[in-house]
Length: 477
Ligand SMILES: Nc1ncnc2c1ncn2[C@@H]1O[C@H](COP(=O)(O)OP(=O)(O)OP(=O)(O)O)[C@@H](O)[C@H]1O
Ligand SMILES: [Mg+2]
Image 1: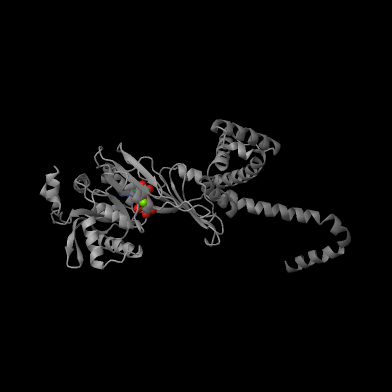
Image 2: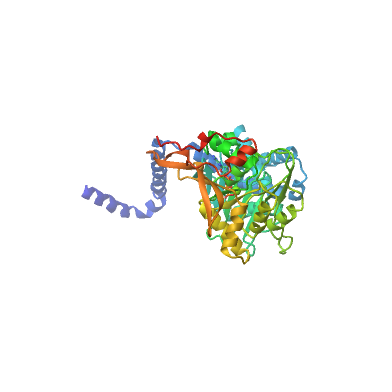
């Protein structure tokens, strides 16, 4: 074999002058062919992922068409065009471009492409499908190539991407300019509300190091009601009955919880226990609450504009709300100096008010309130601060997102007064964790703690005579 090889290589130089010209192409062609065949064979053995290929091709076509569309569409006129007109226009331009480029697509692909183009031109591009997906709660973008969503309390990476950072920035810009704001190197972060009511926050480079960061809390048209939450196991019917009595008898309630733990959802559900005859004023950064009562005045605070003017803080709204004859005030989230006015309102005739705070337990929630008061520059002895808190707040409801993604009301705690320098509290209900299933689901149950409500007599006087059995603890199974 060795000699054969040698002969062949010997022979080649002998024919060199002619072979270079005549023979070079065939070996090259053969080589090229075999390269193609080699690549094709394993691919054929492992079935080609048609969907991925199709998606890639559609992505390329879409990009090309989008560029051409932007050249062809009169963007200024877009605002006034009706949806039907615009869709028709986009379909016509895309058909023209497809024909020009001799791209043949089946009807289904053409329809998908046209609707994606429509989303791209009028909506929020790749985010649009996620916004329309009802199973998605949160959308979290970490730069153009990584979009996570939260479903059933769990984060999942999606296969949705932006073309590049420029594409992502263009969509961010579209959202924020629609609400009269700007985001750029000098104003690198922004809060806004999407047209559908979803809460939107973005931060752009260079503060966002690996590309723009976007988080969207989807607006749910059908907010979870008390019954839904009981069915989902967020709390029990007994707890719901207790909460109904607490809301109806005008206890001041704070819903405490971590980020995304279900505070706003709980607040919204609790509000359903308010009598329809009452005048309710709500104050939020981004209007998320959906109260069912007839007499509701909604306020939305706003940050300063690009020139640093026009700020209306939650505190401004709250101060003004007190002049608007409210029966109850609901503040979406208390996180700053408005805490002073909130506590004062709770203490001075606007009982039955509610708010949320970021805290991990009832005790922690009280410390948060103390810190907020200190940060607001109020110089008051700690004991006086605590006494103010203890007489303002009656109930702290703790919302938690547990490690298996489930959201539960892990504690209901009453504030009963002061003992010396310390605020006294008693837990009435709690979620008792017992263990974990093999697939990491939490095993546990709700139980009363055995402590009778401090407000039991008040409940009774107001016609909410809760049976004493609801305060009896449930033994672990
Ligand atoms: N018990 C529950 N079961 C299932 N989903 C829930 C439950 N409670 C809340 N959710 C969903 O979880 C998401 C987050 O809830 P929500 O907005 O109430 O949280 P939050 O604590 O107010 O968040 P943030 O701190 O961002 O304001 C929402 O999409 C909501 O529909
Ligand atoms: Mg919230």
